[in-house]
Length: 349
Image 1 (tube, rainbow, N blue to C red):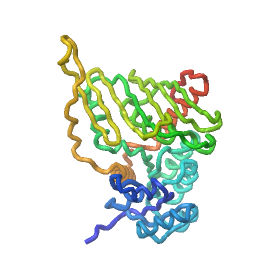
Image 2: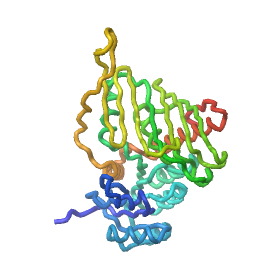
Image 3: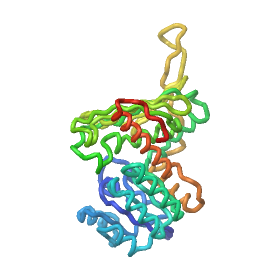
Image 4: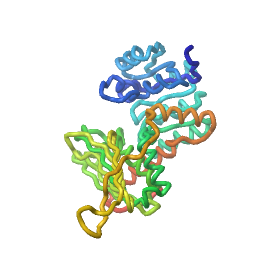
């Protein structure tokens, strides 16, 4: 007998992360908001919305959904949902979340970055608090088993004292886009995952120094951004986004006083301090077996489970609206420093 699904979901934004990535034959599945809600045992997709008629048609056919809308306000006024999934462009997040929060729903799964700027992010968080709506921000690596395992080992002291984190999100040059409309370039759209992971592992930062390359001028998004961060616990961070590469690369390199961890989309390495086999009286890092993670649950599905848990118990998720806000705050501080002659910028802003 088919399991009864408790929660009705409306998906706003049926493009790449909303649905289309499910068609990529090389990606692990689910790879999209719709894919995760489709397989989650407690949710059913009741309707979809997109301003792109072609994306909307493909969405309806793929997930067998016939309640389709081109205006999210009309959809929210017509349908009754428990959960809204926000997979639209970042500049639309604030308007959608604020309107959805007052529509009687219980939860929102919002794609990253949380918003275009901190003012919008605050507005979204306040609207959810006012109406008692749970909100999760889709920094999905927070639910990846290998990232969670390393965080657990860092926090327990098993890997020693955290000293530094270096992160890369490297990609090709972006198109010429206005900062006011799009918020930022590679550091904003992909780098949000990195700065969020820095907080996930190291906690809050207290200061940021930024450098950037904006070949089209200050009014346009950056091609490359570099940030140096100091955290409350004394650890240091170095982050590089963009870089005009002919490839995509995402990686976090963590060093403690006795270990090194390298984590990427498909990389998980642990190196521990051992007596050197090459130099007498020295210690060196030696690669060892990566610790057992206890199995891998799809990060998109795990994020939905945490959203539902917050809806049912009130317990905040691993990736709250505040977490999304603080990731955006670190990026804004980096941009602010870069535009101010690389002067350090203190946090919180």
